[in-house]
Length: 599
Ligand code: GTP
Ligand code: SPV
Ligand code: MN
Image (cartoon, rainbow, N blue to C red):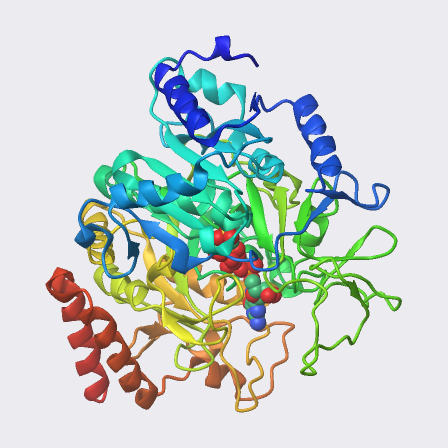
């Protein structure tokens, strides 16, 4: 592709300006062709960004290693840069735009000397859909280009869509020195601009993903009356052949990818259940002319957690990542294949090269006696959805899919039962707004600590969360047929800290109850202060043996724990001061009085 083919004047002017700042040696426009991709793969191998794997066993697969201090999103270096601090809200780090641009400019200046700048035009959502958004990412990382080619629809068709004066999000990325002290991930929603510098980790640098499709998109969605959410989208084919679609918001590394492509347990498969995967991380939802909610997945690939992926937990993903996959930060075996904690098969007895690039043997421990991991806990694969055996046949449909239920969930050892249903939209918004979860390896921070993560959007909401809650309430009022809202928890533990629920494919048993509720089939439910729960006999347990009393424990509501929870909710809500919608305080009071009265 030559520059003379580009007609969008704003695009040309912006690229020229960024070139003057970053001073690359060369500029390459990404056209989306296989030939160009192959050439870039070769260059990435030569430059050391990619390690080719055993092509007989893992065709078209590569390994990439990030710097040791660049393995997860750095939330403390991520900023929303609006004119007023209030618009970013207490949930975001904030910097005034002028200061943010100045600070980043000092790092971007000359950062691409002796490097190539790649120009990646990409579409989030099917090219040409009225619900899609276009971005252009400039980057000096071949790894970023190859990932973006999987995660987004990128190349020439997008430029044609942009034509002469189409709008696009201006995304600028440079690895610069990969220095954590000179790392910034900046969002300028008012300028439709993203600047990321000093990192090479996916969530910080694949700017179509969290930065555009959640932070910038959530800002646009409020203005344009739609929702941009950290949610999976899945179709559940019922025994009568109808496919019902649901979305689910779980915080990072809490089970979206796994749920989105679950394999039904034998009993439910026999009944006629089948799963269709639409997306595993992001949902864009809007109200259609019939007053119902419809969703598209803006992405075209999975950037998923590797450890724990095996043929028991996620057989569809095991199949998906056998070819055309970029792996990041896993263990390299001597035969050019890979291993990770929780993989099928044993660790290689003779060892291998760990995610840091160091020799590794099974059982290795550090100076303090702590096990050294072969793969980083937040190691990831990047692969196209079309590789997935359960990929939905509706992925390219411009309209998306109609949504029957919204499911919230977190990683809670205690408190939250296996499943409950909210009393209605407003209460459902309260359930989402008060979500909490134990921290995982997906973000830099203290693993295991419980934090509030409303709608799994705490790190991704591009504006004041009080306004976000108001927007959710408003969306409910705009719909004539609202999806029902549920909450699930696969992570409740017993006194020994062991999971009570087997999870993964077995989660379909819970989804079946959820759909029965949406279809008005499971009427005899138990009303508790927190919401409706199933009777133990309402969950189909065919073929699943749990110790007696376990299901009861999973569904139990411990009032003492919930009174404690109320304190946490109150403290969380208070930080929004008078901006918090009154409806949510009302729901708080209602929950409190339901707990106090002996319902
Ligand atoms: P992001 O890509 O970070 O947004 O995460 P995600 O929500 O897609 O998480 P993912 O499905 O990759 O799950 C992450 C971790 O949770 C893995 O270690 C899984 O093995 C584990 N996990 C997923 N589902 C279940 C479940 O039902 N039960 C249990 N116990 N663990 C689960
Ligand atoms: C998450 O952390 O929620 C992810 C991975 O999905 S990243 O794209 O790195 O944010
Ligand atoms: Mn995610």
